[in-house]
Length: 267
Image 1 (cartoon, rainbow, N blue to C red):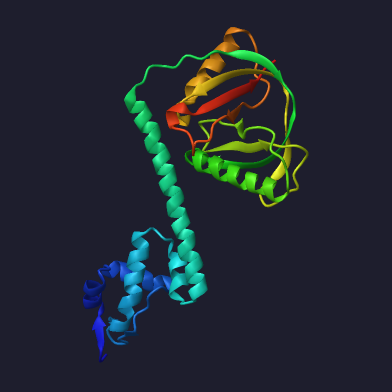
Image 2 (image 1 turned 60 degrees about the vertical axis):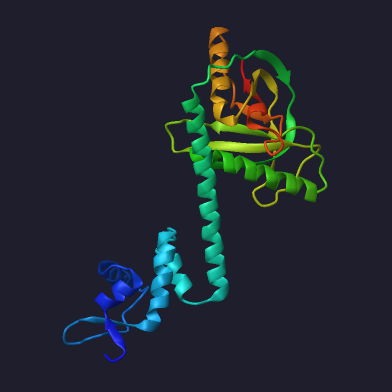
C-alpha cells in the first residue's frame, strides 16, 4: 500500500466523512485506489483528492449525484453543459425566493386594503400567440416573464404585428393543488406558426367584469377579491378563466406603479 493513505487520513484531508466516502464508493463516484484483501481496509491516493474536493463542492451546491458522476467522467463539453444547467437551476431558485420574499414583505407592511371600481363590458375575441403550462405556484413570476420574452421573439422572427398588451390566463388556479394551469398570450394580427413552446390560440370574447389594479403583482389578490365580491353581489356567475392584462412593463415601471387589468368572463 505504498504511497496510499487509509480512509481516515483521506477523510481529514478532503473534509469528507468516512460514511460519505463509503457511500460515494457504493455509487461509483469515488472508489478506493486499493482495498486490503485480508482486512478490507480502504486506501486512497493523493491524486484522488482533486475528485473528492470537486464532489464536496458540487454537493455543497446541491448538484444531484448522477450529474456529479457524469462530470467526474471527464468529458469537457458534458461537464460544461451540466455546470451551466445547474447554474440556471440555482438562478431560477433565486428568482422564486426573491418573489416569495416580496410577498412576505408586502404582508408585513400591513397596508390598508385597496378600493376598486368594477365595470362590465363586452370584449371581442383576439388572435394570439401563447405558451400554456402547468407550473408550481412559486414559479409563476419567472414563468410569465420568460414566456413573454419567448413569445415576443417568435412573433418578431415571423414578422408578426403585436396588437395589444400581453396577458396571463389562469385556466385553473386552485390553491389546494401544487400546480396551476396558466397561459401567457400576446395578441397579434393574424396567426403565428407553432415554434417550440409557442402556439396559436384565440382569446375568447364576451361579457366580462373588469377592474384595474395599480401596484405590485404581489398584492393583486385584492383585485380578485373585489371582483369576486362584485360578481356575487350582482347575482352573476363566472363563465371562464380570469385573465390579467399587463398594461405596463415591469422592467420600466416601479412596482408601486404597475398597472394590471383583471378581466373575468361572466354571465
